[in-house]
Amino acid sequence: MAKKKVKTQQEKKHLELVSSLGCLICQRPAICHHIRNRGDGKGNLGFGNRANHFEVIPLCPDHHVGSFSIHNTKAQFESMYGTERELLYTTLKEVEKLEQANDLFNFYNKHKGEL
Image 1 (cartoon, one colour):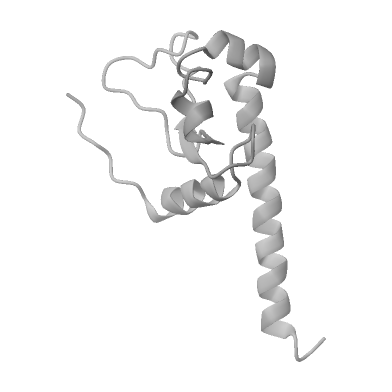
Image 2: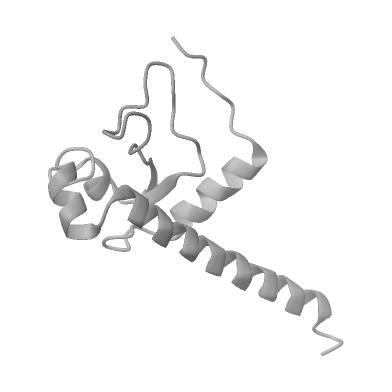
């Protein structure tokens, strides 16, 4: 059995940012779904392999593991909302916007007396 890898600070920060976006589908509070369309192309990563912590998308529990979810009805879910890769692209663009907004907010707070 593979040894569980400890998350780095950078991975933890990314996971927090992604989950803070809310579910991509319904905007409710989200947890991170590690995308699975790697490995053999069918979502099978192979024994002892895990998806990395940067390839995650925010989904609420219903869209993550509910009756109509990425885990239980993947083909239908992807035909309705997009593939995991497409949803990852959307997620990364949203994270980038959030990071830019945070940078601007921090810059303003640091220099508000000078502006």
